[in-house]
Length: 318
Image (cartoon, rainbow, N blue to C red; front, side, top):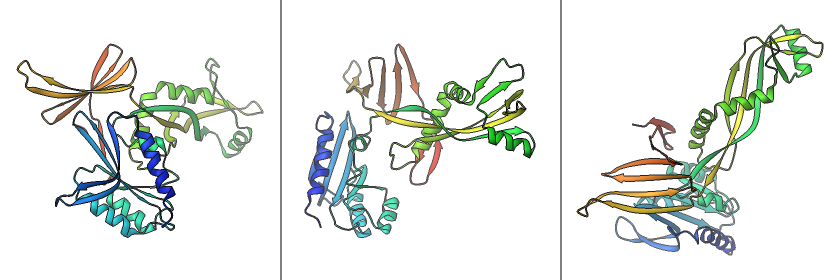
């Protein structure tokens, strides 16, 4: 093993990240009873609780000179499996993991991190309350145009790389970039939903862009070659890139709703994102209901899809 300096830096980063959180505590070398009542030690436990919702994240830290072997993953998994209050497992290594250890982590649902890759943003994303906000980058790639032309004509188009699309009556002349931007602006919700589905399947999100593919069909439109020849455009296929920003709420409050006799009817959590936007979670009779308020308009949210990371499959909501 090393001298433990990297381990200390990791602990310090975790503690610094959550030091001002009203609902989250960080425990080091924490003893917690398993299903047999025997205390087991967790290197770091992040415990978060909001009005009855509990989130306990167990973190194992190893400052080894070499890569972590599979036996260490198996031992960590076995320990956590017998502690029912643990919701998530993370293993942090100073120098990576052996191949079989990575395979075991995928089987056990353990998230693997190296000490160097651990960041404050990653830690904040672990806790259950975050708003995911789409960032439309207006970056495009894999552009493909389909023309009604023979091979020789297509060679001219490829050589000239025209950037303007004309309509037959020349009343709607636009650059390809303008057209792509209009597609994004007019279909923001649909594009966001597709990107969100892609994001849900990613286990280790690293602020990457998600491609969303779309196809446009054209009638009475064409491009011009450098020789002035009109070439009919039939189709445009392209990827637009979407990124995600995770927004921390301004305020989170919990309350208990009672009837006039003092009986508890429901529990509620209010999540304030800004003066204009907030969400409410209502828990009643083992059911959870979500409401979103923007300005003076409140709507009840419905579960459209749930994603099972173990099976890699989506399931439609009720």
